Image 1 (cartoon, protein in one colour):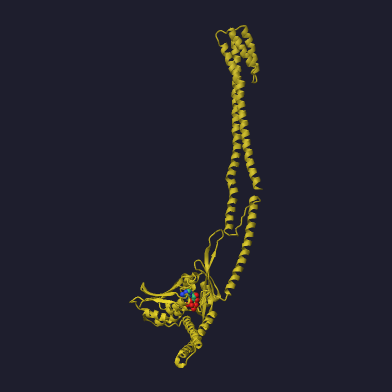
Image 2 (tube, helix red, strand yellow):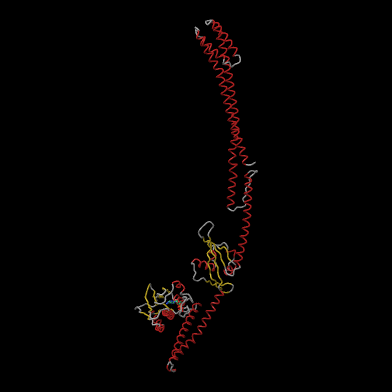
Length: 572
Ligand code: ADP
């Protein structure tokens, strides 16, 4: 049966009994009022008439007006005959009254009338008693029937009170709980309601929905698992080692290549804290250190694996997502990709070795060419005409440049192979700067550039490799000349500051665009559009040498305003 029918039936029955109870109560109260009315109208009034008639004949002398009054009362009594036998008694009274009227002082007639009145009174009083019993009976019946009907109403009402809220609320509560379970992805949740009402059809619909959701979730899960496997296989087959971490540095995945170079076993790594693994594994430790210091400068790692040295470049890829329903990005972990750069490194070594060998091989012939040119210029070897002299001069310039370039190439190959050998000693900066200025004298003269250097007295000695420090300052002055306009000045200053000795070379030349300043000390970097010949190695070598001596090199420059290169060296 449907809930609606059940509820209509229950409330209908309750309504019927309440209506019945009301009708019954009205009827019984009506019956009671009728009984009382009967007593009043039929008997009480007769008693009143007879009592008044009694009073009239009880007088010592019955006057004519008493008789008239008596007759009136008698006439009224005649119209109020309600009991069986009352009529006869009233007729007797009538007859005796006729006698009394003819002889008003006859004690016999008075006595007859008194007896008649008493009989009528008794008859009415008996009737009152009888009718009172009937009224009592009606009241008892009313109580009985009203009680029975009330009991029915109570039972039905009580049954509804106990059962109805639970009957409606319990399935709704079960449904709410089940919906919550579904919301928490427990798709195995089912509802069971007995019967064939709306709740059971609701349960059937709910169960169908849950089944469909489960099916959907299972198929999605299968798809996700498939995708996961696909991605895992892809990562595993990558040539580069890859490591995946979550936001708490827990290792989520590691591919075969990463396992190979780290010597780790997958089952000992997955789900573990990276810091925990780092305690016993050098590679993971150095990766974490690089991550912590956010070291981007030197990303390469040298790893000995598979019986050979391999070089890897670390790439840290942070993974950020915007969670559903949120606006801000959230970091959920990171990838560490180690790009195998061994082939490039090997090529780089080959290139460096080649440059080192070639430049070394070039040095001696160039030096002998320089010597020969000097001899050519010597008058003892014969006089040269003006044209020959200018040719010799131009060959000399080219030889100088060739020597400078081979020197730079040799230096950079030393830096790249880590073979830079420094001879650190206490040196006088004044002599370093003077030698550097001397080296560039000719160049400066060609462009009519004046180099100002007024050294302070009593400058302390510095810890440096004299030859390399001279080379650096010479390179800075040479740059200042090359990148300056004719007829300008270059200021070289030396001063003591914070326990360091500062050498600055300041020119008023073309200057450097600020966007290129961060790359100015990179190997082979030249500001795009630079017209002067050069290798882009001078500043890179200078930086390497200076840092190897414990000092540093900085630059301040503005496009079109000139540049200032500042070296600081440790006071010995
Ligand atoms: P090179 O001068 O051989 O090109 P460097 O390493 O000495 O190589 O200099 C790198 C680049 O920096 C130069 O190509 C030039 O563009 C720029 N540069 C260096 N010094 C100066 C300077 N004093 N003024 C302007 N530009 C300079």
